[in-house]
Image 1 (cartoon, one colour):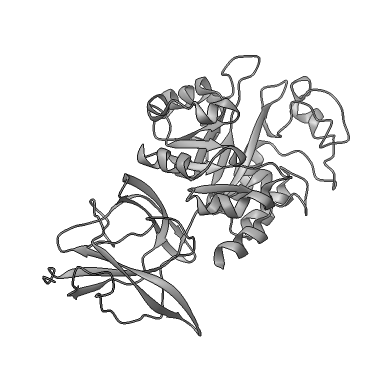
Image 2 (cartoon, rainbow, N blue to C red):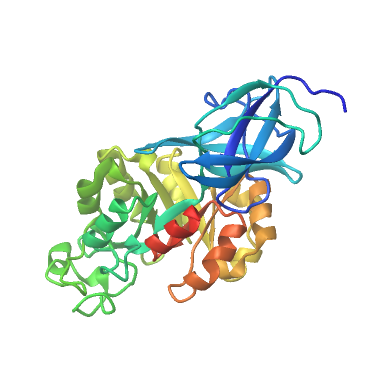
Length: 359
């Protein structure tokens, strides 16, 4: 076979068995433009005492990688890349760039690439979003205690469902009423914030306002916030954006909603905020991709209603997929959903999913 040009190789550990989720490039640390992969080869990569099956991504000289976003954590800087497979350009998952090996010649055959093993690897994983705090079996949903546990367990985002009080304050609560989660009864909208503070969540925690959550955790975590219409009107978005700007969290938030009007309202107030359209029922199969792309970066479908072809279709349109579950079916569906190559998952079981991804 004809020798290929000098290439750059990046070794990465595939934590999820998803098709095409491999990245690389001549200048991946800069990650400044698009790259395609040339060939792959299986190797052994040593990390400590364990050996993991990995792949090599070989990219022709002069090609580069584009990154969509990056985040800095205690474990280093992670990049979200754009890559190409047989079905077109796709948005990938976060990877950690550890080492780039340059100037390695190879032949255009799958097993011809030669590299040295390294002591480090590059991890790939979906965003882990703590559903209503993600510690619902340990603490009351949407409580400060639940959020603290999620932050301590290093969830990528904590999810906050918003409701508006009688005196127009934003609080963290999923239901329209306080009946299920507190010792009170009635609609949230019939209470002032001060009145809601007299109620108790299941373990004695108080209902937190959105500002309390921001003030408590600030930039130590990221926030995945759900908006909704109030009496058919988009009225909570202005106060939400005010608080986001007040705490300097513009780059720390994703806003999701079933309401396209709500998302478009946010877009008009701040076009730089990342938005996700929630999908359930017939909206999953009938989603208007071109319409969604006008204002959102992706979709949040009910995991039970999707398959790999749905995820691939969204990725082809450069849309992210953040899947959510019912509490009762998450454990049944999570592994299969991860294998579809979704970009994020909501979870009530942070410990379980983190162990699963590490495996």
